[in-house]
Amino acid sequence: MKATVFQGSQKVGVEEVERPRAGAGEAIVRVTLTTICGTDVHILRGEYPVKPGLTVGHEMVGVIDELGPGVTGYQVGQRVLVGAITPCGQCRGCLSGHASQCGHGEGLEAMGGWRLGNTMNGVQAEYVRVPFAQANLAPIPDELKDEQVLLLADIASTGFSGAESGGVRIGDAVVVFAQGPIGLCATVGARLMGASLVIGVDGDEARLAMARKLGADVVLDFRNQDVVAEVKRLTGGGADVAIEALGTQQTFESALRTLNPGGTLSSLGVYSGKLQLPYDAFAAGLGDHRIVTTLCPGGKERMRRLMEVVRAKRVDLTPLFTHRFQLKDIREAYELFSQRKDGVLKVAIRP
Image (tube, rainbow, N blue to C red; front, side):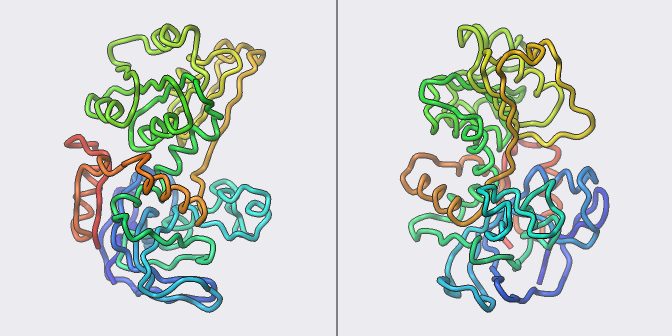
């Protein structure tokens, strides 16, 4: 089969590789639609280490092609969504209610249950082997199209969880720093959770326009205004929840500075290097602030719930697909996406 293979720093390419077979508890899914995530770009740049020769990617929709022994309740030919995080359902993390932090004896405590495109071959391919299939195949309702549900595998689940972990309540004021795909989904999530004021922050006009389209009440361009001061003015003193969706010192610090005493900083960014906590913004530890981090929630029940939100027409994420490619052109897709050319947000890739 054809697959997108990490060939070393700054190099990915489509290669002919062996088609996978299903072992016990596993499924083979024929990929009908996939995409590129910001984490894939970190891998491409050598900022997150994976082994050369690995098939990359972790967001997909597909059709069951083969079921291994022990997988029940599914049928070959059934359309399914597979989460970016594939918890086993049986380890201490899973049974303690922290399925995203599934370790299952693999030494993955730092990145939880992220296996596809990380510790095993991923989904930017014609077929993928899904581990712990019983816990990670979510049947897609017939009335929903692939593009309506693909982003629920990762960025929507992650973005929504930024609002959930942040404890957004009805009537809250929420500010979301960075309106890339995950930040935009966090903006949507804050609205879904009942926030009465949602402020989106970015320096890209196209992304600010998309934030407005997806429900932000106010958008702020950090290039031409003091965002911290403006958030405090708009909220009458500070936000109840600040969501950081980029992973830089500047956005983390700005998010912290926008909070009301007792507010929550919900961090979705992936940080590299040294992250510092300014003691004045943290009120020297006396401000009753809360900082929470979140890894994309996974598992079939999470996917089912998110698809129900889409089916109920509470949210439509298809406008985030700004470009479409065939698998054979994925190098071009990576260049476009990683360089943020032509107003790209997400790319849809069909094997």
